[in-house]
Image (cartoon, rainbow, N blue to C red; front, side, top):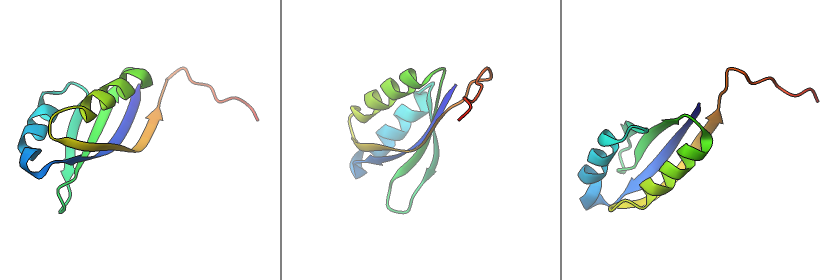
Length: 84
């Protein structure tokens, strides 16, 4: 499981269209909107590659100026840390 949060900057006139795209997404959810119009979104996918691909596709949507990751982690129940 890969989880990430992003700051998405939409074109002001396209904010509602971008929000509608997020609502229809199986990977992304809108978590908050800042006072300057940026959207804080959460992404969850089965693996990191899927999440990266989805974030790149999101950045190419009409009305999206920028998608910047703010936190990324990959959790696996079978993960065992390597000794140092």
